[in-house]
Amino acid sequence: MENFIYSIPTDVYFGKNQIQQIGKIILEYGRRVLLVYGGGSVKRNGAYYDVINELSKLDIYYTELSGVEPNPRITTVRKGIEICRKNNIEVILPIGGGSTIDCAKVIAAGVSYPNDPWDIVLDSTKIKNVLPIISVLTIAATGSEMDSVAVISNMETNDKIGTGHKDMRPKASILDPTYTFSVPKIQTAAGTADIMSHIIETYFSNQTGYMQDRVAEGLLQTCIAFGIKAIEEPNNYEARANLMWASSWAINDFIKLGKNGKWSVHAIEHQLSAYYDITHGIGLAILTPHWMEYILNDQTVHKFSVYGIRVWDIDPVKDEYEIAREAIQKTKNYFVAMGIPQSLHEIGIKDDTYFDEMAEKASLKLTNAYVPLTKEDVKEIYYKSL
Ligand code: NZQ
Ligand code: ZN
Image (tube, rainbow, N blue to C red; front, side, top):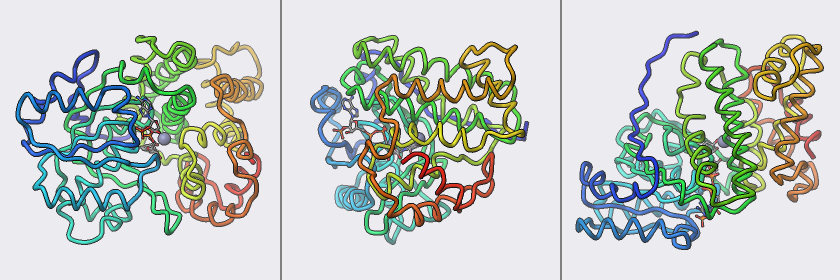
């Protein structure tokens, strides 16, 4: 296990009606708020009205940025920064999923940055001052509610890039699972696949962390126990609650501290959403089993068999390769059972037009991955997924 500093300072207000705390939390940081939200789901499920009701009670000023896209765009970040500057905003309050929270994070970091905010996406060392962020989460998926990362798209250059800063971690997040009852089946599936992928990316690492891996296995089993359940019973509180808490813990750094390896499938997927604007979790679910098959070899087979035995309850007396292959198949089967398409074709990516440039960009991030991948390797994974 490597050295690390444990510091995960987000205050989490978890459970029904925790929104009633939001006014008090905001007043710790300021009284002028920018609400950030997406295409309107937060109005349909009531989260938005709950927030403004609480703000009104304490006379907290707010203005709004709506219409944040899934795969949030730098153009929307720019709009948000303008609104903040014009209205002397002190606190950024995203209500929604990872896209909304990520957009809010870069707005928060961009207000005091004198030049174009795309700079701070490309180079996180340019981030100096970040306005406080308080998030209200409405979908269990990215873990943005408790991590320091934001992923922003630039449609002009076909880039989707992650940036991060310790102060971009929300100061507080409201996690009320009832807000996720309205998440559609396919978004529930995509969110669950994303949570699972975050855990898998850290689990399959060249650094060891026995304790971290046992926690990771428990988180994966939580996703497996409740992903399909939440799809079948959208108002099942236990299912939604377990997925929501697992989403935060998958990526809040806890299972990564001490085994800080580079991720693999996310770099490959981010190119798909950059070029085709697809749902992140769907792309991950299509790619992950192909990536697993591609990297299965004598060096990785043991880890895959541990994964198969502990996460998927596969009989340990079997041969390691047999367990590994069964584990990969079970992973794929779970994604299919949640209703996720199994090929890029099915989601509208019908040819290999951009595979070369996508693989080129992705491979730059994969030289130190669990199994390092070249441009040709990544292309091969795209072809297998097509
Ligand atoms: O836009 P609205 O109307 O709000 O609808 C959203 C959107 O269409 C809808 N939705 C959210 N909550 C809902 C709901 N619909 C009904 N009821 C609710 N309660 O779901 C759709 C997807 O929302 P989005 O925020 O895009 O989903 P997600 O949370 O999966 O975020 C995806 C983005 O986060 C990035 C992804 O790449 C992608 O851009 N990621 C961020 C990470 C991070 N910050 O650490 C890490 C991840 O690996 C990921 O890359
Ligand atoms: Zn992800």
